[in-house]
Image (cartoon, rainbow, N blue to C red; front, top):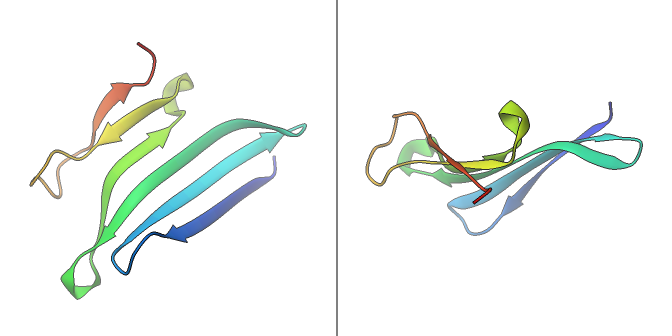
Length: 77
């Protein structure tokens, strides 16, 4: 399965990582991560949208809680 990934810089300290897998010309899975660069070059995953576990959802970092697991939130209401 062909996969592609991209890094898109939004500013000097923030960027998106976009990755997806295609089958027969259709995207079958994806991940989009918002990353922040902190002082000292540490990279922090702030939010992640993906199709893990069979459905699209968002995992978001709680404010001020660097290093703790991302909390899932379904995109389907």
